[in-house]
Amino acid sequence: MLENCWNQKYHLEIFGCQMNFHDAEKTAGILEKMGFTKADTAEEADVILLITCCVRENAENRLYGHLGNLKPLKQKNPELIIGVGGCMAQLPSVREKIAEYHPHIDLLFGAFNLHQLPDLIMRIRETGSRILEVPGDGEIQEDLPVTRESSFRAWVTVIYGCNNFCTYCIVPYVRGREKSRRPEKILAEVRRLAAEGIKEVTLLGQNVNSYGLDFPAAERTDFADLLGLINQVEGITRIRFQTSHPKDLSDKLIRQMAEAEKVCEHLHLPLQAGSDKILRMMNRKYTRDDYLRLVDKLRTRIPDLALTTDLIVGFPGEEEADFQDTLEMVEKVGFDAAFTFAYSPRVGTQAAKMENQVPEEEKMDRLYRLIEVVNKQAKAANQRLEGKVETILVEGPSPKRKEIFCGRTRGNKLVLFTPPSSGPDLIGTEIKVKIKKGLTYTLQGEVVDREVF
Ligand code: SAH
Ligand code: SF4
Ligand code: F3S
Image (cartoon, rainbow, N blue to C red; front, side):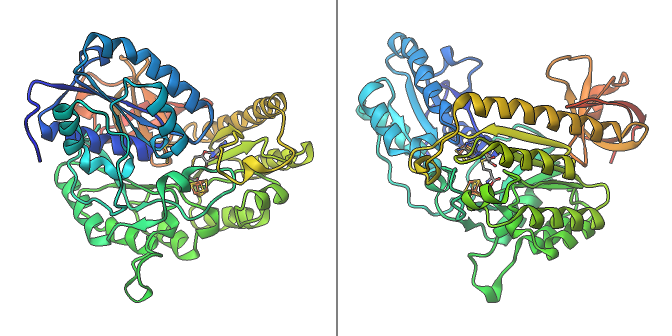
């Protein structure tokens, strides 16, 4: 790898899901290996890379506005390289627009080209010309350098891409088909992380439940098997994973979640909609009853499971009665938290072509009504924890109030607490706190035991 960018600085701007944030960690790792260091601001950077998301439409408009804001920096420093990567850069329409209307953008790259970044940057440096077409080979790149954000938690991708083609979703078009990483590669990475002091790993994939299904049946390690293997890695104390598709959540996986003691009692299980008609039109391949049966099984096997979800309102053809079905499901299940979205048509997906698109005001009205119910449920779930003692992994000072510390329960709830004088020593350790108050988004706690592992 080229290592001739000493004294130069990079700046990353990251949008979207955990996949993108993890890609950004790899991007930072690659740039640092080249000799770059992280800039404090965009103004002092020699290379600015944007890692974009295109799951909703407004992100695209925001990107163009943002690119416009970067123009003065390029005028001031013509040597500056500005690149756009991530999911948006995979869309031909975006590439065309950038090529034509944003001449100050030097580079377009995708999630499949990260390993080529050193070569691409050096070519732009040497030739002064833009690189807007980078063929990806689609192969999984193992062993890329990674600059991790945290010294005690880490993301580990287990499966790339998605085969599900939910009719609203652009992800399969920009992230390609499912491809699982070899279990021995994943295990080696987790062991390395544990040796470096990492306590918590979050296994990432658009649908982790289909991990391994692309391996030949005879030698298949499935997701439940993988959890079992990682559960044995010494030093790791918490295992999380995201995201699970309800259609692929097997009994074997539920059993493994219950039995593997390091697997946290939290599941993010996107419901998307509560009406069977809408679920069918979304191509989700389960019904509301299927979902309720899963919740039942999960709560029987894992009684203190925290359950979170994603919900979309205003999918084409959604009528008030369908929306009421979603509200009813939220009431029935009682989620600990939910990400709520107004349906956003994405060109190229099936749903964008469907009739009966719901007017914007209607979507917003439903969204606000949904958020109200979700928040009420979340607060009630958090209040049920009042008086209980929870083990949290301490993250450090809370982003908003430095004198307050925060940490997460195994159920992934954020607990705020006043640290003892030795507060900084607690970062990255597990301690016990008593929950004093349950609020909508957070819990307030009190340290009862510094049980440092
Ligand atoms: N693979 C994950 C996450 C996909 S994107 C999963 O299947 O759960 C994250 C969330 O964005 C989705 O769960 C969905 O709720 C939401 N989303 C995706 N496309 C959308 C669209 N076109 N409009 C609104 N919300 C969308
Ligand atoms: Fe999108 Fe559905 Fe795949 Fe999730 S499972 S990434 S919502 S197509
Ligand atoms: Fe966005 Fe790509 Fe993630 S579209 S949600 S960053 S996979």
